[in-house]
Length: 388
Image (cartoon, rainbow, N blue to C red; front, top):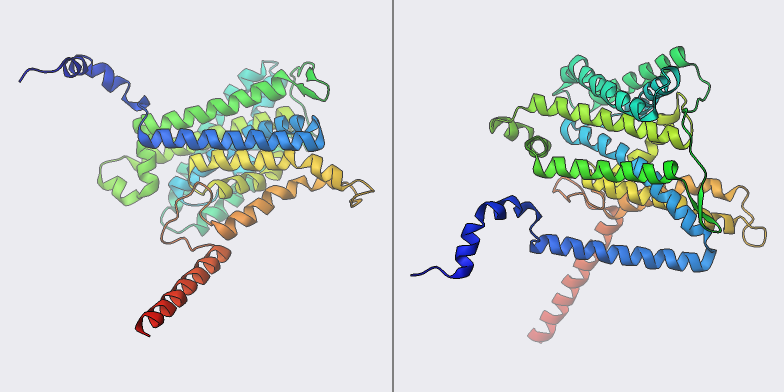
């Protein structure tokens, strides 16, 4: 039987088809794109409604929210990588962010080099720090449950924190970098190329890097396999030690960049990373513990909610409304209110997998039980009517 022209062309273009296969729009990918577009449309409509209610200032706070989200996402990805491979919450992560900021500060201020060189140096120094921590401390605690490494991480954080106090003292310091003038798009809405544009670009770039790593590289696939089942990964020939070292390197490298970005929008001081750690944990839990994509989603939710609620709080603080003093200071509580709601209705997180060992949320479980009891009652009534 003669081959059809379509078959011949597909055979001839076989290598190219294989080359572009990762970018083929499968049905599942099309559904994800459609859902993403729906979410974007809903978000744009939501922001438009808020703009109509509170004025153009809501757009400025939305921009601040995206900027905060970019930093939180970078940090949350690094934190969730360690949890996925090692299975414990690294409470030294905030201090590792601070250490990265101080390394970049030394290169930028003391060595009088660009902040870019400071960030690059900080990244590689923290990569080495992460590998050393794994070799000297956390590899020796493997198999002892999650409590031992958690306590060890607290100790590591305190050592880093007090070491910074000794070497750099407690006074806040600033990077030697020119932020430039804010470009006014419209009255009440301005953008800074460094504080806004560069930070958003770095956050987006790191999201693309981690997606490419986890999806298209052998190391990323080995990391996912190790996170799913360590013993099975060992049995299939994956060098889990190498994977663990690479994970620590990536996690601490991400921490360094998050610390530098945090120092750019505020200042550098010994407690700067620790004060942001709870917000990062909230992003990880809201998105889904152990999921890098959940960390991205959680960071976006946390950052936007914290900043976009400010106009509402300012309105509530007006004397003719509720008269709450310093109402805008309560914006830090909003991400944790979202965290509580997520834990009640979906303990595994928005993007987390609902495993069998994860209990159903308290309220969601009660609702499900009530519905099941109602169905049983209705079925019994129908059976009685039919028998009668």
